[in-house]
Length: 212
Length: 212
DNA sequence: CGCTTCCGTTCGAACGTTCGTTCGATAAGT
DNA sequence: ACTTATCGAACGAACGTTCGAACGGAAGCG
Image (cartoon, rainbow over all chains, first blue to last red):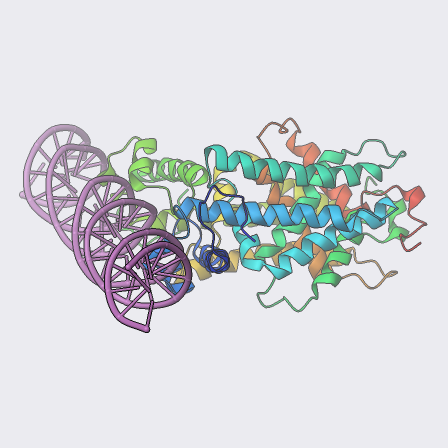
């Protein structure tokens, strides 16, 4: 599946499949070296192509990054819409959303790392295209958060809470898979939802609200 | 204050102050362009020096990044120790810690952005030096989190909770200062602590624990 | 079938640019 | 005179990208 409907003339079935594997290789290289430091020669090597061969499948380095980011956020957004469509309560909808996010991460760790780290590497229209998807994804999660807005304790900011939720579920690419990575992804998602909804503190101690 | 006690022979008072302003300029350039893409020519321009002049104050590009990261985490850790030394309850200790983190961020936004984004850019001993500071900082926060461990509901993981707390307070460099940045930093810190401790959900709805 | 033509695919080699770094010289301060 | 500070100019390496040529299979035609 090509990430964006490009205006390419000829697309053999083998062309598309090789493009996908090229994007996979590029995501791996970008994830390890970082987009700027990564070289097209290394991408070519990882993809089993010559340097010039890469340019048969893409217009350049920037387009590779654009494809990776667009495809990642697009499938993330589609997955979110699917898995929250028939779920009733706001708590369950949020749980499904976080599960979708964490699972997508687990299935495509390299691309996610690239998306989390290189958000500002693109410029112009490619940036705006990806930004629109990001915005749509954020708004979708924000809408779910707003649904469970507490009527009591009205001094909570749903936007800020959503931003912090993104902090939780986007930051863990930094530590997952290195030493402490034994946690199963579904367990992780569940704990993150529980932490976001109910907090970490002991309910018994919650009465003493810290201002003593 | 020079970030690390280097084995430099002569250090005029003016040398140190110019090094600090060079590091400031480098942090700004690294924050905007990213470490790899940023050029020493741009750093020199931002610092009001010629390209060759920069190399009178540092050994190279890597050392600039090392100084920035080391100094940032070092002052972050020192600030944490200071501001939690005479605070009693675990909730207040956590609140003080997050306030310290967020305030440091606000005072040195560029350096923080660099530290959050370029954690894996260094290699060898410089990396290990910074990593030791990062680890010490994480352990200090983890210790605070463990203090408020709930005895009931024992299925919570304090390490995981701390990692997610870091996600909240490290991720907001992504959105702070762009459009929605009207929130005061102390208010932000307070909301983050409240979210981490008590969660976002309405206590009234908390009885229906989502499994209906 | 044999031959030619075309097109998707792949590559080695090179081009022009930018990068981090170094060198030697020139002032300025003590 | 000696050290510090500063700079213009250059070096070698690595980068993204391009070009022209070769290979290979499918289609058109006798």
